[in-house]
Image (cartoon, rainbow, N blue to C red):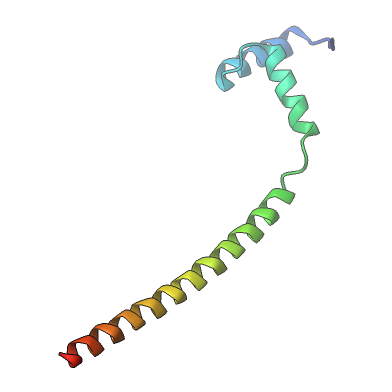
Length: 85
């Protein structure tokens, strides 16, 4: 259990913030704020996300190239079949 002292005005501001943020109580609001401070820094997430997106972009580009090759082969095969008739 953690106990802190607040001025009446500070407590009133936190109660209003609870209503704005949808927190059930000042305790929940304080708990959430403390755990956010303990969480790993968010600046590491975008870099990992950027790396993952870059890799996905590369894979999608390769898949696009492979699809174009397949389409090309199919078209050549259809033309060859129509010439054979």
